Image 1 (cartoon, rainbow, N blue to C red):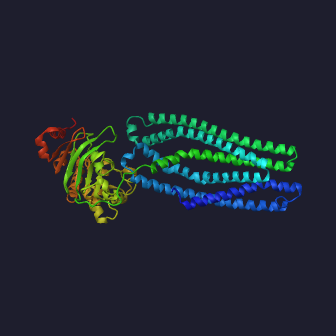
Image 2: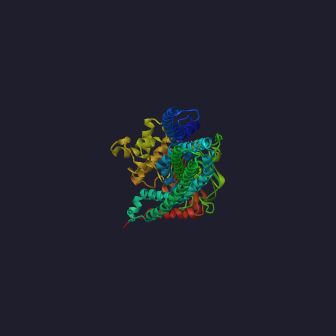
Image 3: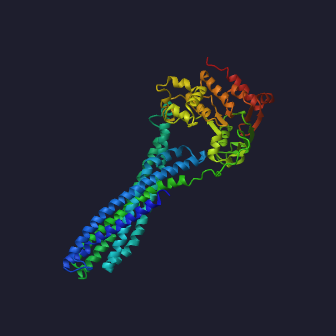
Amino acid sequence: MLSRPELITKAMWMSIVMGIAEAMSLFLLVPAITALSTQENVWGLSIQAWVYCAIVLGVCSGVFGYFQFRHGYDTAMDMVKNIHRKLGDQIAKLPLGWFHQAKAGQISRMVSSELLMVGEVIAHLFSPMISRITVTVVIMVLTLIWDYRLGLILVVSTPIYLLFLSASGALSRKGKNIAEPRERELSDRIVEFTHNQATLRSCGLSTHYPPLVQANKQWRKAKSKELWFEIAGNIVGGVLTQIVVISLIIVAARLAITGSLDPLVTVAYIGLALRYAQVLMALTEASVGLETRRPLLEAINEILDACPLPEPVNSVPMPTPGTVELVDVCFGYQPDKPVLRNVSFTAGAHQMVALVGPSGCGKTTVARLISRFYEVDSGCVKVGGVDVRELTSSDLMRQLSMVFQDVYLFDDTLRNNIMIGNPQATEDEIYEAARLAGVSEIVARLPQGWNTPVGEGGKSLSGGERQRVAIARALLKQAPIVLLDEATSALDPENEANVVAAVDKLREHATIIVIAHKLHTIAQADLIVSLSAEGTVEDVGTHEDLFSRGGTYRSFWDKRSQAQGWRLT
């Protein structure tokens, strides 16, 4: 449920009660004026009694209206809170392959301004719409009781009105369907424009980014079309409302002319018809409002209905902790474009395994499959001797520490960013992990030391500094398996020694799978897995074995050795 059932039920009943009170106060004008004009009791009540009834109904309408809005807002805020929680829980379960750059802009927009608009559905549309429907039904019933001829006009015109209302909603929905994709595209381009300012400025595109300009033009055209569809929807709804009102006035006037209806009562009934028209117009506006919010609800349902990777209730016991094994693994980010083909290798406990190969051969993909960010197409990935599909996500993550190329630091202090690796760690453990990873040197020159905010994404630190913080996290977590993707790629020679020392420390208690191009890292590995450009395992062995056998690995090593001597002249 997006909101607690008891809140929704209470809001609905308050809206119904409010609608009944409003309808009775509107209709009360007819018998009251009849009693006034004839100086006789109507339905057993005198004019004074009808006045008292009007006062009571007025007070009741005010009281019920207050509670209606109160419960409507309570339900709306509860729904917003629950949607936030459900979206967060769902996003945490979805595989990494579900996310892409377009999703970032969509989700960011959804959980901020758009989610408040969804709350308006309950607070400003859903409850008032129930009240208006109740008013319409009650007035129809009371009119039938008062004069069946006038009542029949309402009964006959209501289905026609609902048909026009449906057409009005369809027009509004058509317009929204045209504009919504363009709104998402514009949002994605804005996120792209803001996140990539460094690249855009270096290319001279910081003031005129063609994809953003084009997206804005398309959005303006789509919004213009949406506006015309909404206008058409309002016209359709408004025209029928006026037809209903005019029909009521014509029938009431003819009854007055023939003497079947008192002239004063006729005037009162025409006033009721005009007020009834306002109720129908409000119902039309609420219906159009609901249609404009429909895409937002559908976008939320798209996330909530997305299928997370299946996982067991309880993990299977791991017979060989610290081991990693890939068995005939095939995988592709797109079904017709495989990245890995029948990849098999085993990393024993406390071994250091290096993955080498040309760019695009699937080295980072292997690490992602071990982490089960994606599901293999065939074969299996085992951690601790158990298929990762037989481990819960929390148990699998407890086995792994990851340091990937793209390090993200949260907008918090340096100390807290390291503590993410192990929130229960002691101060001594934090400082020791930081020292081994070379973070202590960073702390010494920061203005607030450990309590210095690193900014969103760690923007106040350099790429190498962010990498060292990520390695400190891995050291602090002390997981039995560590995945390193180019751990020293962004470090200068002076500080690279800190990371190498940290990796040596990790080897004492963890299995390390490292993706590296630097020769000394590869040579220190206990096992090297050489991947081909086609995503297959070309050879497996120690550095000496692979070097002596020649092939792609020998060629790779020779080119790297030659590149080490390069320098600018």
